[in-house]
Image 1: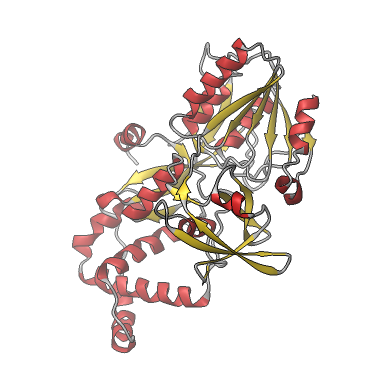
Image 2: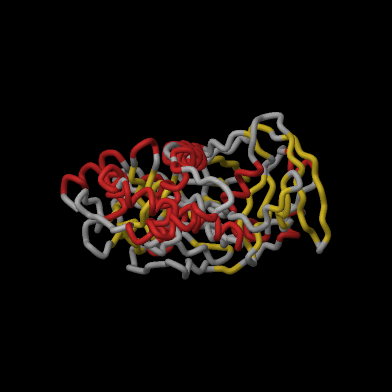
Length: 414
């Protein structure tokens, strides 16, 4: 990769640690979908074999960024000819090309590296910035191999109807969606404001139906409350506005005479590295926040806290974490812990210690690619390991549904 390419990347694509697939990023597939995917990919081989010169430019970003890199797809042509001769149906050339791109990227064998169509990229960017549109107000994630409700949000359809944390998502409008990824399930539950969806969950081995009307979901990335002299600052994701919003809440806490800060990062799957740096800079002044290391050395970088912005330095701080605290959230938690600026309470974090970049492609498509691993200030990579809290306090689904919060209670007592 040339220096110019690196410069272009920095300019057009701020390096991101992109969670939105988070602790729920694993995908499940069934046999039927696998067969269809194979058929479409084989069809793409035929198309590529006969149109390689025209199409190779579309694939070059996947092949090391060089327009001279080529793969011989001609071996798929015979298979394609047999396929079209026997297949009872038609295959869209456009879909074939998309699935071929998807298959190429899967060769990286990395759950955080994948290709997105223009429509998928648009949804991804909306998700990252909290623009979820209309929905039912549930946070979902993968638990024990099943997509479950992690919590319901206040004053939204799901909570009002009686959906509970721990419910297994089973069907949407009668369609079995239990084998879909969390991201795909979330799309099924969203829709236009005022539209209806029949949600079926499994609770205690019994199916329960809920007839819900989708509403616009208010999902701020930062909000706070004062309890006496304690400021509880909750950050739900790290988007473009998070640093500014967190600083505003920090200044309010300081002006209100707060002598303790509780930073709630539970359920926060991450976002922009720059936002994590801005938040950590509320406590750290010029200190190392994290070190990024890549195998080829191109993306090696050390991130330092902003100078002169540590308005919360010296104020007792507790960070709440759980199994859904991931990526950019772990950057903040790890930095504050390593520098002795905060005590971590809750459950071990998810463990996403890699950094992704978004490469824009033609037609609004995006390649999300893992470019490096990141390390805490004490040179620890937490990938697949997570961060152990200083004080382990568990919180069950039953406690969530009853709005009992032993983790917050433990932090308030510190």
